[in-house]
Length: 256
Image: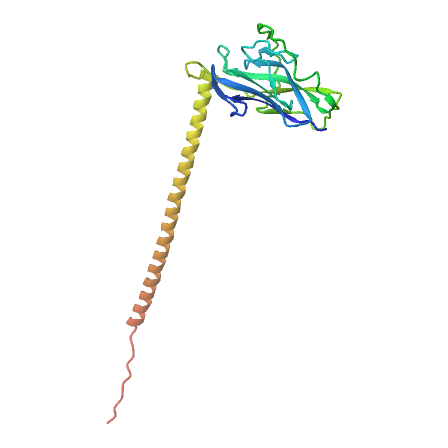
């Protein structure tokens, strides 16, 4: 069986809301994990939130249960088990541009009860715990904005499971006062400048094309007019030359 394509997205307000790029502190968002297959079930576990500079904070443990409900609660699973989601509120690290989440998902084959005891997880309503910080500053894997695809040639038997990483899009977070951090503002201003410059280029290109076309038509018109003028002038010159040529009149000689 081929592996499915799985995605992790952060959406606005609801599970089918638009995928966010910017959000304000306190905004409601929905984390959505999904695999495009009815064959597999998923278990979301081992989730970390990153501050964008390599530091990670665990928010969902290895069993698939939350570590701090205020940050991210236990994922809710659809009946088909190929989709999970969880509402949360946007937060921001001090002096950081935004946040990004990374989770592992465990795939299991639903046929013959292959997902029984795997997903959904059984989570006790345990009290919130403090974040555990991972100071490992090793390089982060290449980030894909919407999804990470497993090797299509990999297969999974009903008795086995396989884990893979999913990484959400980077979410730029706006401060409570509605202002973006200087880095984001700089990027936005640069984008706006590029956009305006591109628009001006398009406008200038259109104006240049119109002016060039007008000049070209005027030149063609002048060429035609001058051609007609010279042809008529040449014709008149020839006519005048013919008229000025002396003519020998016939005469009659009379002999007495």
